[in-house]
Structure formats: structure tokens, C-alpha cells
Image 1 (cartoon, rainbow, N blue to C red):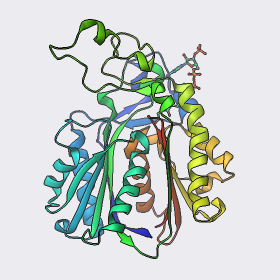
Image 2 (image 1 turned 90 degrees about the vertical axis):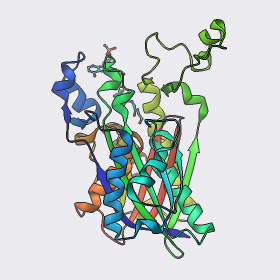
Image 3 (image 1 turned 30 degrees about the vertical axis):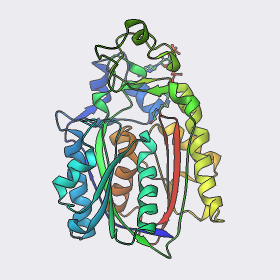
Length: 335
Ligand code: UT7
């Protein structure tokens, strides 16, 4: 009933933006950012598209798995920052990696997206034996939707991508728990296309965002966040998701060897781990060098941990995240 991770890969832009660089844009400083978030630098695209970063990460994961890309039956891409609303990022990545026979679609569950996508792929592989491998790619250019005049949010975000190749494994340990609370949608959002067709009545366009609460003018194309509300949600949702995933298979969280949480804020990670009484030694953290890369954050941390030997074959791993939506998700598997 589980999966085997055959290969992992990640790609982040070479260009890095330090906290001191951020202090040139907004009134902030290195000390505030480090103590309130744990972030030191973040990788930012200086022009590399989201799809390109995803394709580079995918190529590494396929090479790591040592498989023929033509045998990939499914590509799922997770992103909130695609270049196009159509075609999907996954179709472009399929083209780039040569996964010629794969079904392709994108999935948006914001920062929980990677966990949602692995779980979705697991269900496809379980019910369709003609699909040998699935490729899951998470790629984000949050810099495209970040408001660089808002000091409370712009210091958080970075860009990057990561991918995994998985196969179905009948006897492998596996559990997942996916959830959402749409009443919190207004706490973290960014627009896609605005209603600008010639048929839109001006009075209706003015009320377009009423259900989200009144956002300030001039923010139409960038992310809006109520940080404290998201913080509160995160510190409850991550423990809940991990506990529920464990409970589904009668497992204790003490049995988990490594946790790979969404890298949003060091204080959120520490508080969540305290709630589930797990020591920080078990937790993979790379936020200092990446910031928050939304759906790419968990798989980038996972790939780096595998490469650095912090996650070993046979270890029980819990991937756990939260994000806009508001969404939350956890997945337990053996690496
Ligand atoms: O993937 C999910 C994405 N989102 C998140 O995970 C966000 C979750 N929330 C957070 O991580 C935190 O709420 C933030 C990092 C966004 C903010 O930290 P905080 O400790 O909740 O700060 P705060 O919003 O309560 O603000 C405290 C003070 C305020 O000043 P006053 O009103 O006390 O004078 C802010 O204006 O800190 C100020 N502040 C800053 N000061 C220096 C806010 N941002 C900054 C900044 N530099 N960058």
C-alpha cells in the first residue's frame, strides 16, 4: 500500500539575496529576520522561469532513479507560480525530460502541494498497474508574486524546485492525511487573472474581492498575507496532520525517524514539534539558506537531507506542511 522513492533532485537559482540586501528594499535588518524567522538568505530567480527550474530538478531526480523517462506514466507538477494558466507546467516538463508516455496535470495546494501530489500519485499507481513510475515536480518562483514593499512578507520568500521519482510498493509503510480550511482563504492569497473582459460591469469588478476582505489598492498582482493568522493556523495544522497520518496506521509519532516540515518559519517548526513532543534532532531544517519556497520547500529539504546522509534508506520519514487555502498535509513513508 505504499511507495518507494527511487530518486530525488533539486534546483535552486544561483543568485542569492541576503537579509542585508532585503534591508536595502524595506525597513528591516538581519537580526530581526533571523530571530523572527530563521532565514539568512534566499535563492531568487534573476530570470529563470518556473518551468525551467522544475525541469532541471526533474532531470536530476530521473538520473538519480536511473530509469528511462519513457517509462514514467504520470507527471504531476505543483506550483502557485506557473508561467502559464495553460498549458500545464507538467506538460512542459514532460517535453523537457522526455516522459513521452506520461499523463500530465498540475496541482495547486499551495505549500502543501508536494505532499498532496505524492499522495495523489500514490493513488494512481495503486489503481493503475500500467503506470510504472510517477514523477512529482514542485517548482516555484515566489519572487514573481512577492510584494517587495511589504516588509512583513517579502523577507520570507525564495525560489526553487525539487522532484522525486516514485514507484508503487505493495508492502511499504505508508499513510497520509490531507486537509483544508477554506474559511482561512482570506489570510494568504494572490490573484490570477483579473476580470478585465469587455463584458465586466465596473460595479461588479469593484466587488470582485469582497469575499476576501478589503485588500489595499495596488496589490492586485502580489501576495497578501496576515502573518499572525497564518502562524496560528500553522502551529495547529502541522501537528494535527502528522498525528492523524500516524493514527491511521496505528503508529506513534515517536517511531518516526525524521520529520521534513514546510520551511516557512523556524519558530513555527519548533512550536509544531513541541506540540507533538518530538526533538529538533529529528527535524530537517534548511530555512536559513532557502526561506519559504512554497510547495518546493519540503522536497528541496528532503533532497538535500538525502544527499547529506541525514535521511538514510530504511528510515521512517514524515513530510508535513501547511499553506494557503488554508491547506495542510502529512505523509508517512519509509525512505
Ligand atoms: O507558507 C506559508 C507562508 N506564511 C507563513 O508561514 C507566515 C507565518 N507568519 C509568520 O511567519 C510571522 O507572523 C511573520 C514572520 C510574518 C511576522 O512575525 P511576527 O513575529 O508575527 O511579527 P508581527 O507581525 O507580530 O510584527 C511584530 C513587529 C511589528 O511592529 P510593531 O507593530 O510591533 O511596531 C511589525 O511591523 O515587527 C514588525 N515587522 C518587522 N520589523 C522589521 C514586521 N516585519 C518586519 C521586518 N523587519 N521584516
